[in-house]
Image (tube, rainbow, N blue to C red; front, side, top):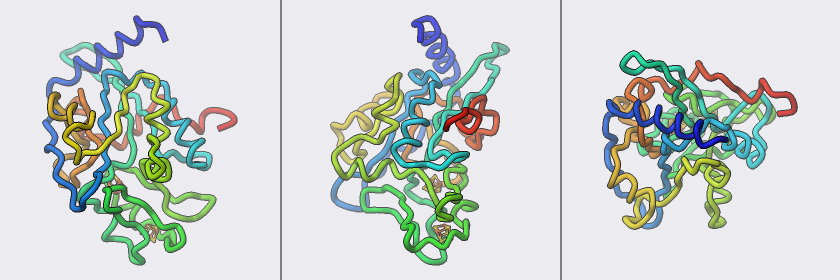
Length: 235
Ligand code: SF4
Ligand code: SF4
């Protein structure tokens, strides 16, 4: 990736950031201990999909499905056309609408804020898939269970970063403890304007975007993506 292209994307993202609504500051956790969250610096995302692929590899995501993806949008700002990247994943919402609809209690939020699915209990009814306003869940067609991003809970529990964060070429994905005032995520949120997707729904996402245009904040369905892994042979 040449520096010229990188600076072009950075410039576009920066130019798109003017109207984003400020996100609510992180609320204290309901438990003693970490409250995991992610900050996505859109000016540093180059749309390479390394995060998408590393997630598929790490979590054995089946073909035609993704737990995270970077959608690419064509946008026009002040009459100037450009492209914008929007990495998307489960927001691990503070008030997740996907949980109360589950008839068997298979999906729940851990004390550290990570929303997970107990596949041993899930009956695959897809109520949670329908309830998520971010299109972040799917029924795994190999297991017939609900599936989604877990912030790589198995890695986090082992003291590692989520695979998408570790593989991010541009350093756009930053993961950390929202309860720790000295963490990078807290310091970035304290010093820069941030926004979340669909803030009007009151779900209180714990994935925060830096440089998010207001147009994208309300359209995270992401159908206009230019690249999906199922279009690539061998994935
Ligand atoms: Fe649930 Fe969707 Fe929020 Fe994730 S993004 S916690 S799946 S409502
Ligand atoms: Fe619960 Fe599974 Fe149904 Fe989702 S698909 S609501 S996790 S039983």
